[in-house]
Image 1 (tube, each protein chain N blue to C red):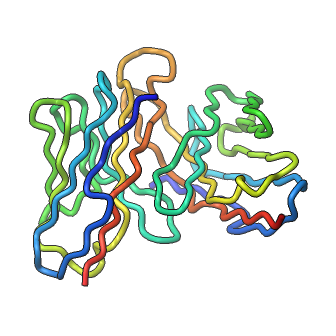
Image 2: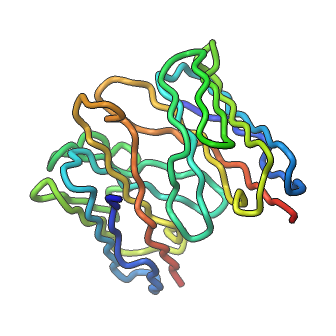
Image 3: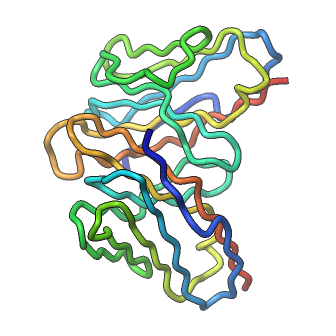
Length: 112
Length: 117
């Protein structure tokens, strides 16, 4: 089945630094989604990407849909303490079945 | 803002007991999903409903897990009997499921944390 490799597994950064994380797939996806999950809560959508090459921003977050359709990147600029959490990439193959395949997540810790 | 409601938030049970989780999706969302998330992992799909019909339950351990969405609105996920390895977060999500903008974007509930002793 499809597998997503998300890296890095964890990051420890200082407040104000920029962050980059990425996801690669063994298969092509038609949609990439990035979610953030706080401890004990469900994932919350950050950014949705629908076309290869698409670059989308949401405040300090920027994500890109890779040209090969097998990868995606998320960047966070000028990190703040509330950015702490687990970031998940998720891909959809398309069609009428909107099943999401998730990566294993990137744990982000921001030191104030 | 519309939310996906789940209950209970936390459940502690002994192995071999029965446990049930309830989910109320966003009003009007035709597609409902149950995901299981083991600590340190990403969510994995257990079952997907389109209205009241199951469209994907290939990863649902059917010997002990069952799910229903009788009227195409709220849904119940049951485990009987529970095993130690079932300890996880059970997440419900919904999406519009019809050809509208962002129809394929899933909104998740806060989850139900299960601990099996």
